Length: 269
Image 1: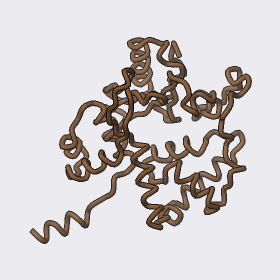
Image 2: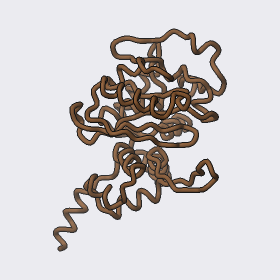
Image 3: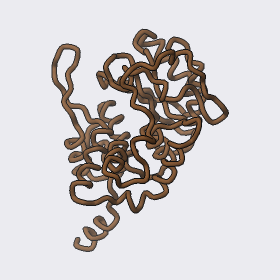
C-alpha cells in the first residue's frame, strides 16, 4: 500500500491550461466530476477541487445566479497562487517563450498581441504563463519587454477599422485581433464570441468539440465535430450560426490554427 501511494505521488502532474479548457467544455456539456476525472485520468478529488476553485457566480437572463467553471479564471488563480508563494518558475523555464514573445511583438507588421500569442503557443502543446501573468511580469520590470512595446489596448473604437487592410497570406487567416472594436475587448456589448477546439487526440481525423463562448454573458455553445479539418470546422460553425440566427453573432474570434483557415468564408457574421 505504501509503495503504491509513493508511485502515485511521484507521477502526479499538475493540470495544464488544456486540461482546464477540457474541464470547462465537459462541465458545460453536463459531465460530473467523476466522469471528467475518468476522461482525464485524474483523481476525482483533484477534479472536484479544481472545479471549486475555478467556478464563478453568474446571472442568467432572469437574474438567477448559477455557478460555472471557467478555464481562464482557474488558470489565473493558479498563476496568482504560484506568484504569491514566490515561485516565478516561468522566468527560468519559459525563456524560449519570452524570447519568442518579444520577437512577435516587435514584428512588422505585428500579427499577435500578448493574449493571442499565449493561446497560439499553448496550441503547439507548449507550456507558458497566462496572459495575466505575462502582464504582471512586464509591470514588475522582470522582462526585457515594457508597456511601450505592447499592442495598444483598444479602449476606444479604431476609426475606419472595418475598412482596414486585411493582412492575409497562407499562414495568417482573416483579420488580426488588433482590429477588434472596443466593445469586444472591453466586454461591453453582447454578440461577440470566442471560438476554440477541445481535442482529445492531436490528429485532425479524430473527433473534437468546437466551443463558442460569448464574451459578455459567458454563454457557451458546444458542438461535437467528427474531425477538425478546415472544411468540417467551416460547416460546423456555419450550421451553428444558421441554427441560432446570425443576429446573435456580431463577431467570432478564433486563433490562427490551420483548422480555422476557411472561416473567413462564413456567411452571416
